[in-house]
Image (cartoon, rainbow over all chains, first blue to last red):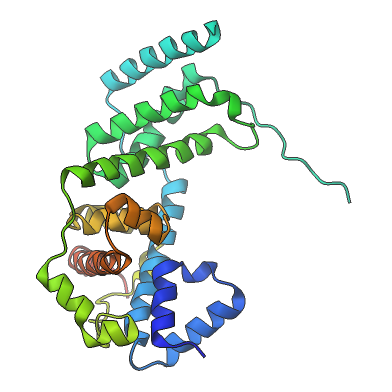
Amino acid sequence: MLTCKQVSNTLSEEDYEKLSPLRKCLLKLHVKLCIFCGTFNRQVMDNQDMCRHFMAHEESSPNQAALDEDKKDELKALLAAHSTGVKED
Amino acid sequence: MAELSHPKVEIAQPDTWVDRYGNYLFAYAMSRLRNREAASDCVQDTFLAGIKSLDRFDGSRDIKFWLRGIMHNKIVDQIRKSIKENKVNIDNEDEALLESFWFRYSGIATTNPEPWQFNPRKAYDNTEFWDVFKTCIDQVKEPARQAFVLRMLEDLKTEEVCKVMDITPNYLWVLLHRARQQLKVALEQKWTGKDVK
């Protein structure tokens, strides 16, 4: 059986979804039953879930921020100059 | 059974990168750094580093993800640079938290945190929620925001974050706790009322 400190330390170090099935099971059981750390650590796990979903959403949705056109032109010129330099090497 | 090798994907040439990946990488950098100039610099540094090491790219996946991997390092470098300019210092309230009974006994801040005013899981399929989420992360005060970005969004290990920010693991715990608190309060303020229960 895990202690509260072990559960909190584990959640500080790792995403609970990435734990081995046994460790994940023991951790979730402790969090479900413990009257001391359960509520707090459930919110830590909620936050991990939220970040995971956010990152999945980032990958799958269209870009909202865009480079300025001036900056794009500047980058294109820079990359062209560097690419040419590489080819000549 | 014969092992399948990864099929090689066509490698987009550097002269196409700005149009193909510029906005993608810029959006990623903006969400982490919250500063257009820093994000643009990151994109530039990423592309230049990509050209320099293109001969080491094996073509086993879309080059977009390889460039994103380079950008991850550039983002960490930007945050490290920003921290050097504004050194992180623990304050009295944070020290008190680390000395508290519950932290020393259970590694937690309180046995009784405020419950969520809405069920965030119900909002995960709503694109508008993630726009609000991004806005709320932007509002988290530094250095808690930087700690949150490095640990929770860039998935750096505790030791790595502590090295970048020049802080102890215990203080990282405090910063992440502060970030979670501020994020929760901000999400509840901005989202409550929009959620369909």
